[in-house]
Image (cartoon, rainbow, N blue to C red; front, side, top):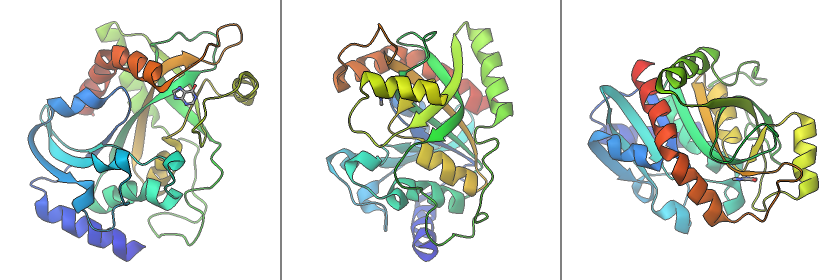
Length: 269
Ligand code: HPA
């Protein structure tokens, strides 16, 4: 596994014209940030040795290297979800490659259903902590010596970055919620009983991604900042039928706010 990661990194390094210490997973609500990256080099996932084999979704996937403002960045356009059938090793493979390429900080976004009654559709929630509710742990198996066998998770989301994001949000007049994200396998949205359970467990929002990548980033010593866009509500009395299209629409509407927070934070980090 380690050898494969190193081969992947060596391949990518040949095409890199910079040495970014910042990586971005362009999840839901952050797609347009890719348009702001200048001096780009792009590498299709399909051309990268040992990268997870593409499904329809992953087929469009690519790595983008370039400048966001005056910061060198590496961005993943398209991520691998567990519900698509990828193993946890595949879902988190790119994060290990990031570690090998010298990435120090990872920025992630996602769409999530809000279980906190104080949330509204379109809110941004800074992820302050998470609950791993996936059926398989991404670090299960032989330990890759990027980190310890039993990694600490007491500050999975960097507190200094959260404080800086709050300051940016105040300055720009953007409302930022804080909360705990629970990551589940999907692909179903939750039943009302499941939303209630997740809220009782301490979650403010639920989604189908992010947690595996964040666990592996922490194992690798990469700092993480994450934001969820609340696209629907799993709150008693407010639960209505959800569809992927509605999730996408709500995320698109929140995109300008999300992009502002991420762009400013990355530039000041
Ligand atoms: N549940 C799980 N994942 C999601 C949701 C949800 O309600 N909304 C967007 N992604």
